[in-house]
Length: 331
Image (cartoon, rainbow, N blue to C red; front, top):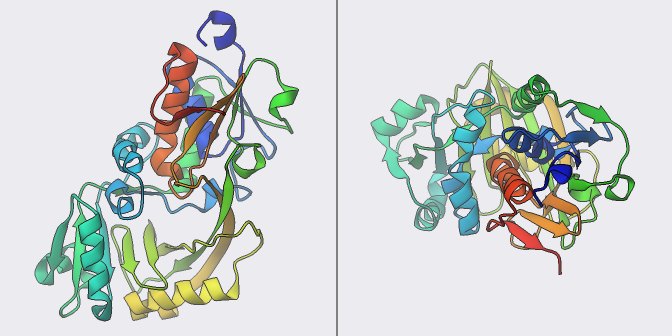
């Protein structure tokens, strides 16, 4: 799949994080694809808009396949070429009664240090409490998803690639098609996993890095966005139901944040959101070839972590015919 006619006739459908990165990876090789999305530029209509933006491959290793850790380790460097990446690590904490959860998380992950007392206070003074311990993943990073999407769109525009607004399916378009529409695509084996989030604003607490609170029932992550804004996420529900955030999800997220630090009780709720994450059974994304169509899908909650790797493998196949470990031919 590398002759000149094929390289000049490539269309990407879907301008979420997967589609934008596919376009960027191709542009790095001198290929200028057409990029179409039913809504045009990225916005609140897609799950890329509601992401946490944590580039945390080692934390994800607690519940993810090795491919997520392996490819995710390159995400921060990939994104740093496009947008601002905060390279401040990430922190995993528990409530005192849930210390066993921290021990279990430590056994399942790597590249962390256990911190407490003065060491924890030096990292996050507002989280240092008597007897509290945490795991510090020093090499992890985070970014602001909405800014990252805008910066990626701008980078593509400088290379002559713009997002066209319009309805399209692979059947409508000749040539090679990269279908990056998430759950709107007819990708074999895909399901939706509902996730909900809350944005808060408060000047009563300061965090410098993402913090994960381990909890047997209501795990939580909090990502600082700057200017007193925090993103709280996220529920993970095996459901294809769309719609606004539920009262139960809001209660769980806010209760967990309050348990982490009581100052969150007085924070202003400035935004809520919910969407469906496209996922395969093993939660590892794939490039799936069906004839002339490549499906880039199944990013689950690893969109920002794995979109660059998925895009790169699609570009490798288009340019060189090379199939990476995330590449699959449809049965």
